[in-house]
Amino acid sequence: MKKMVIISIDAMGASDLSGDLEHLPNLKAFRNQATHVKNIRGIYPTLTYPSHTTIVTGEYPKTHGVINNTKIQPGRKSPDWYWYQKDVQVPTLYDLAKQAGMTTAAFLWPVTAKSKTIDYNIAEIFPNRIWTNQVIRSLSASSPKFLLEMNQKFGHLRNGIQQPNLDDFITACAVDTLLSKQPDLTMIHLVDLDSMRHRYGVLSTEAQAALRRQDLRVQQIIDATKTAGTFGDTTFVILGDHYQIDVSQMIRLNSLFAAQGWQKAKKDGTVAKGWQVYAKSCDGSCYIYVDRKSLVEPREIRELLKTIPGISHIYTTEQAGQKGAAPNVTFMLEAKRGYYFIDEAIGEVLEEVNPTTIGQPERYRAVHGFSPDKQNYATTLMINGGGIAKGKVIENADLIDEAPTFAKILDLNFPQIVAGRTLLEIFENNEEVPNEVLE
Image (tube, rainbow, N blue to C red; front, side, top):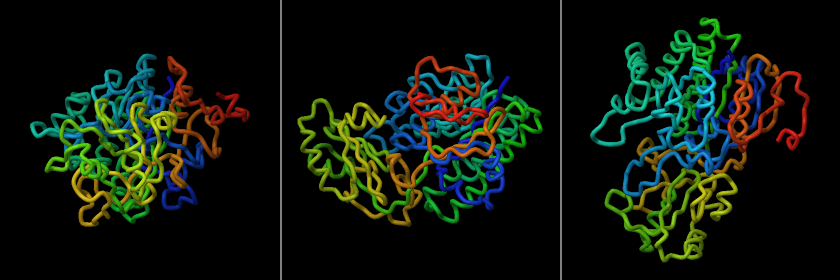
C-alpha cells in the first residue's frame, strides 16, 4: 500500500528554500530530488489553523469552516481555538485515508482534536480554563493510550509546550511511530520556526537557528522510514503553511469602538456582552462583526475605519467571501506591512510594540494572517517519492491545490469537487497542460 509522510514546517516561506541552501543540507538534498513548487499562494487569512485545514481539504476557510485560529469570544481574555475536528465541515484527507483502510497518524496537526479517523493522534491543544491542565487536555483530545506511551518514552524531552523542546518531543514520537506502527498516512506539524519568528523576527538569528533545527528533524523522520523498510513505498511532502512579516505597531479597533459607545470594555481589556460592533483579530487582517440588532450603520463604521493609519484595505462582505474568508462578516480589514490587529478593548488605538512585552499575549515581532497577495509572502511545497518528477521546479500553485494532489498520489478521491486542482505536472512523464485544462 502507498504511504505518505507530510511534514509541515510552520511559517516556512518560499524565500527560506531559495539560494544554495548550504546551511540546510538535508532540505537541500531533498529539494534536489523532489518536485519543488517554489511559490505557494496561501488562503485568507494566512493563519495556521485555517491553512492546515485547507491543506487537508482543498477548500477555502468559508467552505471548510475554520475561518480563524480562535473563536469569537469577546468576553474571554484567551479565546478557545478551533482545536476540534468537529469544526471542519467537509471531508479531510485523513478521513478518506481511513475510509480506504489506511492507518493514520497525526502529531500536533491543527484541528484534529478528538478525531475519529486518526489512529495515532497527539492533538495540538492547551488548557484554556483554570480547572484543567495540559495533561488532562491532551489526553482527552488525543489517542489516550498512544499519548501515554509516547510520554513515557519521550516525555523527558519536553518542557510543557515550550519550543524548541516541543518539536524535539514530537519528532521523537513521529520517528518511533514510523518505526513501530508504520502508518500509511502520517502528518507532522513542527512549530519551532513559527515560535521564533513571532518572538524574535522573521530573519532573526533565533529564527535561522530554528530553521536549521527543522532541517535536522526532517532527516530524522526520513531516516526512520529507511530503518523501517518503508522508504521506497513512501511519498514525502515538506511544506509551509504561511510566511511571516515583521511588525512594530498594534491596532486596537475595539478600543475605538468602545469610545464610540458601540461596545463596553471590561477592566481586563475584554468586551462585555451586548456589543454592537466587534473587531476580531486575524493578526495581519481583521474581521468586523456587527450584531443583527445593532442600529450602527455599516457606512458609519467604514468612514471611521478610513481614518485609522495602518489599514490598507477595507473589504465588504462580498469581497471577503470572494477571497475565501469568513462569509458572515460586515467588513474584513487588511493591515499595512508593519502593523497588525489585536483584540484588546483598552488602550490607545495605535500603539508601538514595546520590546519588553514580547512573549505576552498579542505581543509579537512578526505575525501572519495577512492577504496571500502581499509581496514576498508566499509559502512553499516539495514532494518526493515514486512517480514524482525528480528535480523539477514549478513556479506557482495555490495552497488549495495540495489536498487534491495528495489524494491523487494515494489513489483517493474527495466525494465532492474541491476548490483546488490536482497538480498533475508533478508526476513523471506528465506533459505540461494549461491550467484551464487541468481544472
